[in-house]
Image (cartoon, rainbow over all chains, first blue to last red; front, top):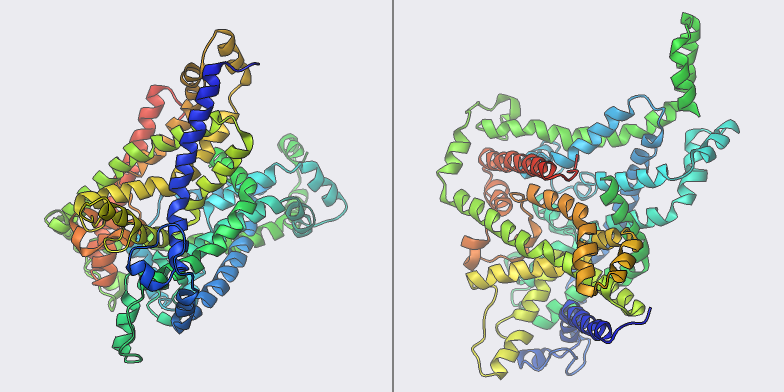
Length: 290
Length: 320
């Protein structure tokens, strides 16, 4: 169909509006990157906007020189890997049996699971539980209490249900038990959705803040977001002084804050575009079934 | 296959031996499935249902040393105390006001963006726009607050640099109460607008293309097609998401206000979640804050049920 002149003009108006929108999305990130690569003096003199002035890696060196920051970064990488593995195992273990229509008690298990989406006990009752278990300040308090997301279970289960049952039945006739069917048929066919869920879990842990704030007062196990919060709020220099390690440690400069935030952000920005197709499917399925 | 034989069987009389061998057979086939469910169900029991039992401390004078069972029962004392407290009243009002403003501004925004994206004529450009639009969703609120303070900072932020170069006074956005609310709302839209288009874009894809063709035959232009085809096609999705959003009207995020707030703006920024953290976990008033949390949950459930009822009366399917 030939487009009318009016339609073509409105095409360009829409394209221009989208261009403005994209600018609003990315300019804050570009500003941050520019500051992280600029000399501290240029920042103080308000010379930096969206391009580095007096290019230097000083801020990054300064950030990595803070041993608590590097340690927190390494710990968070480790924590994220462990959490993702634990969460994926739990999600698969929960989703797969619930795809069997013949499983007795399936309704009960599903109800137990889904109810927790609508009713949650709240901050204090959760805290009391972990306090009673004596899990406060233990490293696994950042792994176990939130290792299973019902939303993700529902996404995975509905994906599993889309796999033809005849494949399972013919494998069962050949004598395969449910575990073999899971590992040899279901998992290989679901790599896309598994990658999406792993991304959700990994990003969730990498970005997780409130559980660390509430349950982890031991600085050795502070994940990166908690450490970043301290750096941004100038809390860490004060604490260093209180511990008497370096009594004249300066508060973090704006450039160093920007570098620290960049270091914590770049890994995510590198990963998510590759999984876009998958997480769109995941969100859509989750919205339909959930 | 299996289910059809199961359906046909009950009418056949089985001897006790046959019945027990059937049961053994079933168990042989499925014991692994039950084994798999042990850990997830244990997880839900320990980390989701036991805390629900802990809610009882809202009616007790709970002390960590006496424990949940030995602490004295005090009835509705903490609820009464909450309603006489200015801090609670403040947090309740802020939670309500900020959520309603969020709903008014944040709810229509992704619908508009999704329609714009859908109308975008250049396919490659559309894909790039989408990828960039999803980006802020993957940033934590700590990082977003850092972006905001670097951008809006009164001494070196770009926005204030611009204001100063225009001969204006620098503005400290995060220290002024009104501007803090505006920033809070704007950052919320900024972070989630792109992500929230995903569902709407999927719904638009599901609209029957013949409807657009028919509208074109009738001479409808772009705006008329949006109004008469796209928006009606989105209506069920909008209703469901609106119900869910209304159910959250008294819910409160934690990371977002906590990362953005400072003592200057506490009167407008303190939400129920941040109040519970500060008074409960930081100052150990567990029973009092458990009561506040319980009040919040109960009101939220009432809102959810209420908005679902309204949606059904209006004629849409609701969420259950």
